[in-house]
Length: 249
Image (tube, rainbow, N blue to C red; front, side, top):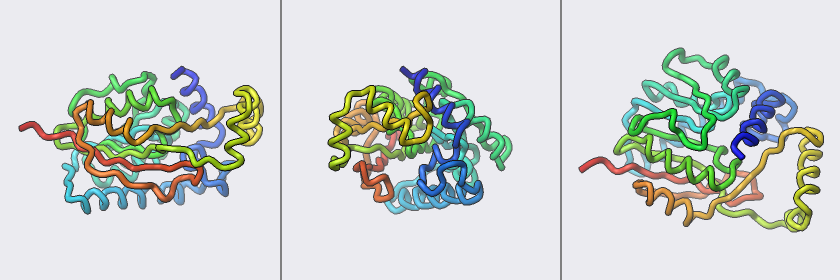
């Protein structure tokens, strides 16, 4: 249920928020230095915008949406490039921190979304929708719904770029995990992540490439580029999708 997802991430936001957003093993236990953490966002956004330009695409620099914004790592990085940026997230604890980290005043706003869609946002309002390391943490049905919403909230001619794993790399350890009963697997994951038997668990899912592309196409978007994400966890095959909402004729 979506409520379970919300409670899980709200708890992660209270325990170790920066690590929950960017899971560098060396930074676990609130070891991220905020300036270093936000600098990763600035580098990432610069690379993404450069990659869009390299594809011969252009984005009006008016409004951008950061889906699954967490504490604002990417929202803050997008703000210098757009007139206004909106960060949206399911976890109130994350958004409270994001507002505290905001350095761009009213140009950068944050919204709590507790729905399986983006009904809090109007049609055709964003020039750019970006999401990284977010869709993979929710069940595929929710991820597909949000992808449709990305297209709906884009202006004609707007672009969405997002990351999603398409497959799991099956290692001997993963084979053992797959054979475990669900209850035992949940206890193992909780113990491994140091949260105790009742603590939050960071779940991960995949969506095959053909499914993602079909959802985008059925929603009226044009997939213009797909590339592998070499920086993702080696346990997954991760892709970055570039899709455009065609301009009206």
